[in-house]
Length: 188
Image 1 (cartoon, rainbow, N blue to C red):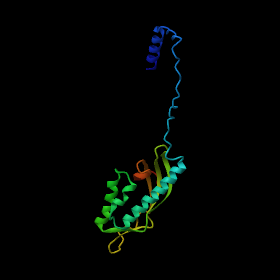
Image 2: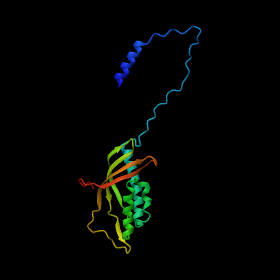
Image 3: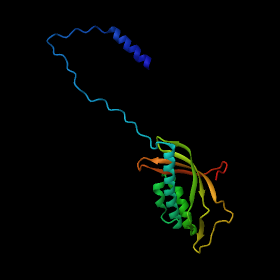
Image 4: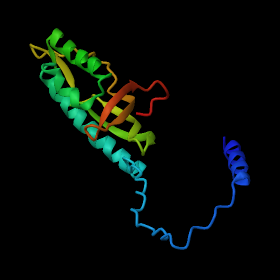
């Protein structure tokens, strides 16, 4: 394309006649001031560094987990409270998990916790972050209406997860996009 434009420009310039000088009584054009072209404003990145992305991911996940704990303490009642924390694609699965608590008549006692969060990858510009973390269920129990535990005695208390978070640009916050049990070497 560039070669075609250069070829056309060269051909046209060779064929143009020399313009006649303007008559001396014709006023000369005066250059008018124009506004300088607007500088292209680059959208700043969502996160300035991996440390900032990790801090945001940690704060977000604590809020998400706090709400999930509350819904689970309530036996899964009003599961839509989790909506602001997850993508629309993930929402049906989250709600279904809470509804299973209601259907079984059980609820969470204690709080799920997490630790050892590290960044697997981060796109600082668009605000997507994938982290590795350890989900700690050791201080929790799932009990029925009579307060009897339904958790197996030999359950694993720490689970390695890979969690993907993405920036919700309309709400200007992170949301949970995916949470999966890590199938590689257990880092917890």
